[in-house]
Image (cartoon, rainbow, N blue to C red):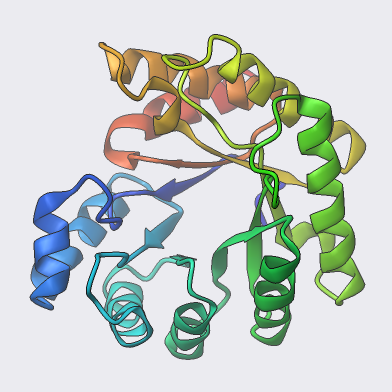
Length: 248
């Protein structure tokens, strides 16, 4: 349940842009993975993301193996992150308790592949506001995709409170209006659909100087707009998240 205080999802167990982790996953060296899990748990993460998407690895075998040891080590719920529904299913089978699936989107093939798994394993799911045409330029178009995802999920028996919409954050370095469109989408989703909203904070500052400052400012603005679930580095961002949550 993320409808209360803001939930922090630790982002560090994701090999994208993390060479040391990618190498550890290829070598099946779980010691470094568990170090990251412990560090984020100590940093007050509420949930830990687990992504093993390294070229050449067998995600169907590796994702459940990593998810199982991380869950046992940290004692926290997991965010199972993969583009492969078979890998997601394999991980959901071995992880205790309720998990969060990252992700489904508005594409028909994604809805058909992922939502039945979410229902079968009583998981929650992050819904990305994109479809066959890509990421819409306007908040209203992103809201329409969010509504489609929510309708399909509820229609399959998934409680609305288990659907978390991600309005998608593009870098402001490439598009000046990127942050404002995302913030507007957050407001619309919360007002019109009443479901939780997740934001991946790091994307907004990609390619820019002073990234931590930009990320902190954006996180505070996103929380003010209604975001109540954040994928970020808990060792650096939890304090600003808790302070923002307190003041609003």
